[in-house]
Length: 121
Image (tube, rainbow, N blue to C red; front, top):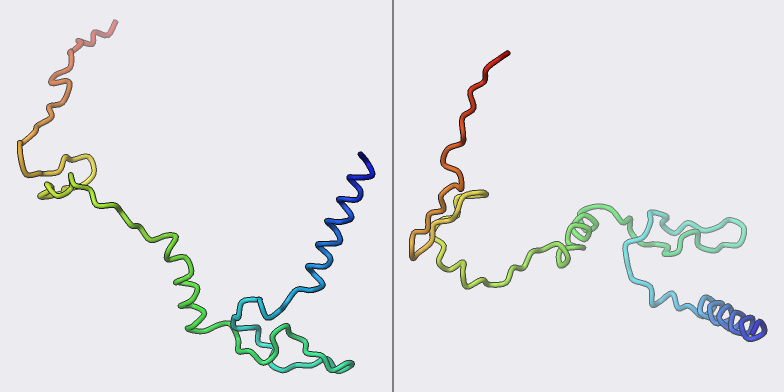
C-alpha cells in the first residue's frame, strides 16, 4: 500500500516536472507587455523581460480591453415574457402596473384600527 502510493506520487511529480520543462511559450496569450523595451543583461546578454520589445500595456487599448473583458458575464439578457405584453404603464416599485384587460383593485386588508383610550393613572 505504501509502496504503490509512493510510486503514484513519484509518477505525478515526474509528469508535472515534464509539463513544466516542455511548456511552449508560443501557446501563451499575446498581450501588450511591460515597458522594458529591449533591455538586456550586461553580464550574459539575455533579455530582461519575458516579452522584449513590446509596447507598454497602458493607454486607450488597455482601457477598452479591460472595459469589454466581462461584458458577456455581466450583461442582462431577459427572456420574453408573454404577460408583459399587456402592460400599459409601470409606475414603479410597490405600485401595481396598469394593464389591458380587467381593472383589478386590491384593497388594504385593514380599513380602520381599533382605538384605545389612554387613561393615565
